[in-house]
Length: 110
Image (cartoon, rainbow, N blue to C red; front, side, top):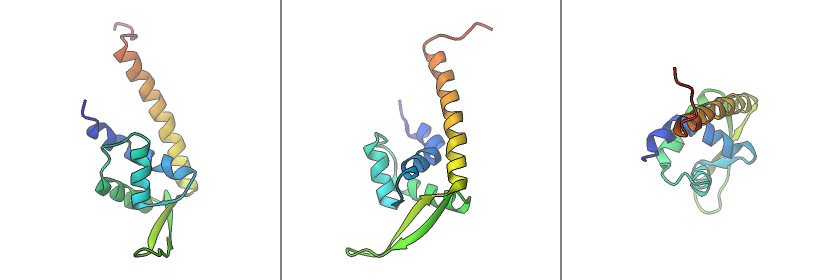
C-alpha cells in the first residue's frame, strides 16, 4: 500500500509529535520522522507543514547560529500546539480503532 496519501493526512500531528519533547529545525524534523519509520516523508512536505503550523499559531520559532552554515530556524510546540496535538491524537486513536475493527471484520452488520 502506498502510504504517501495516508501521510498527507497525518503529517501535522506527526510533526507536532516529534517536536513535543524537543525543539528542532526543518531537516532535523525530517530525520526524526524518517527515524520513526516514515521513510517516505518528503522534505518539502515537512517544511510546508512547519510553515503552516507556525502560521496557525501552533509553533513558535527562534534562530540559532550554526558553525557549519547559515543560521537555523528552530521550531517549538507552544500551548496551542499542545492542544492541537492532544485533540489530534484523540481523533487518531478513535479512527485507528475503527479501521482496525473494519480490517479485522469486527464490525456489526447494518
